[in-house]
Image (tube, rainbow, N blue to C red):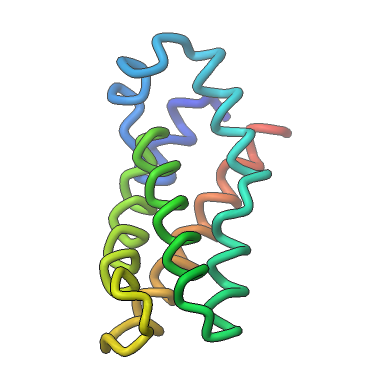
Length: 118
């Protein structure tokens, strides 16, 4: 799988990230490094612990990483969750549903990125 095929599969914007990073080698490097990013596990754990301060931090970090890498689909759902968590109370309706969307996109993204290692 090429990096362009990976971006297409995950709903990313390859042209946008190429303008930002200016090198396919760097795009591939940082895309593979995403597999080590801990923002999603932090988010998942924090929500499980009802720690909305940490959940916000995890969602916000995930959103930022996705924006920088132009992982557009994952960025959109993580941005939605970030806004629901912004008040850090966990009281806004829709948090579980938004987290479900993030999980679905995150898992699909990770699965496609792993194909770059094959």
